[in-house]
Image 1 (cartoon, rainbow, N blue to C red):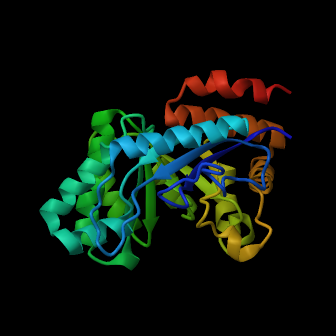
Image 2 (cartoon, one colour):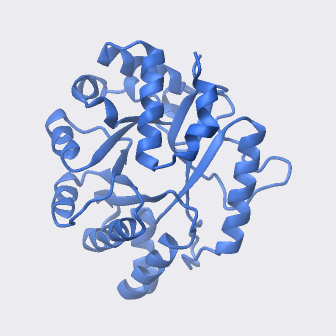
Length: 286
């Protein structure tokens, strides 16, 4: 079985323990070789929204050492989720909240992406969400980094935002469940689609099969979204990323090995990480 590349998951805790700094990292999927972790400070009721760069660097080093021990490759993205953006604004007001969000986006110089960021109608205060999203997208442009998108029930707002930002960075819509017409619009605006393991067993399966069948081959990535993935509700044993990859291969009429290679190429291209070629390519030899 070829290695699989997890384009999106999260830290389960802002702290690590020396014996097992990453206790949940794809431990049940030994074929996973590359993971992109989305790092953000846990925001509690006494919300400060700050990230200590020195502490973050220690955490990231521990993550990467643990990954190396497991023959994996890990990189980190940083950003403020729309849920946390709304809470920041409620606690600090608009201007200070935006300053905190900007500081977070710039807190980790080694980050390979800004994310996850975006829009979610469930959290309210959509005007501030839009402002925070645009701010972080512009930081991604300034830092020449891709962005990772969270968007729920706000596609019309997303489209308006993307139209108004020149020179869009590559954008990964994680957990995308959009229709084919929406997908075609997104592909024209530098957006990649990332599917979450288990989604092929949901009511979105038929719609997404059409999207995958028509997708440009270089715009497809796969993810676990651990520990928040839909798979937990579907199968307590967790649906394998390999099953998702096999389903995509069927949609595209590809061999699963070819699909794995394509996801590898798409992941390296999106995250702009040529170093991955040296670290991962030996694992991909047939």
